Length: 141
Image 1 (cartoon, rainbow, N blue to C red):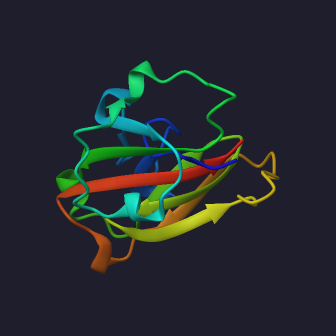
Image 2: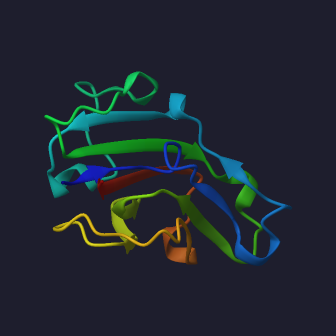
């Protein structure tokens, strides 16, 4: 079972890890789209999303165990942040992508096994920072 779960859906936050309360960008479901299935090419930053559906309309469907979610965010307010990170809160196995590059993962996508430690953070190095960013996630519940 694979699903792509982006920042918005997963309550993904971009912020400096030690200073979370000072610089946080929450990504709302309205900034995300979803698509059933599982294709690693969907992590590409410039993917045509015209056939994707608004994430706010997503409902769990046991017949569709795999899906991707893609979110977009304006990260300009984090330009001067010393240690920005993506923080994800999700009770599922998943992989997280930022601008087409794998940022991290939690759990096992093949088996769906995951830890109940649901909040994870991944640092975002300078080479991955852009003003407009696309976040995608792949998950297994």
